[in-house]
Length: 228
Image (tube, rainbow, N blue to C red; front, side):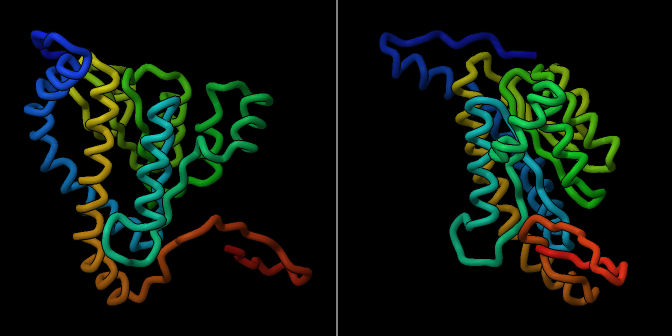
């Protein structure tokens, strides 16, 4: 349920900051969820899993910010982690949209890239975008864990995903701004949990972290050859 709108100030900046301040108090309750997500994401990525993300418009930019922090780094140097922004695959996006319709642009990529050890994170202010809802259904059918950053609940995407971080604000700008804060906090928790996750992977004798797109090919002998 969306909180009542705050009393606004005398200027555009004061109005914006008033709305932001009203959303900050309930947002503080997200700490436990982000810590748990960060730990789970670190262990899945260290174990060979991958994070797929998607969004529309400003939320697409937010999602790419998240993948940049994981493939690059948040603060301290570490090995790259596998994270793909599905909307940034422009040739695939336009081809799928042209051939199958815009509602399928993310879902088809989820089916192509997603594996049961992966996580799909969808970002939206409304929680009603059909292409994100279709992607969430595809993720669940494929066996992925599905999370969402949304605006106020209830909304259809929150009901479809396994878990959701919802920003309690009627202002889409405020929702996106706190999604960015959540992105940074999530990545901070990933970095904190990663050393233990990598140690567990080494002890278990697992393979390396997936850091690129994997393609399975066949040679003349019929054997499978994996290219990264």
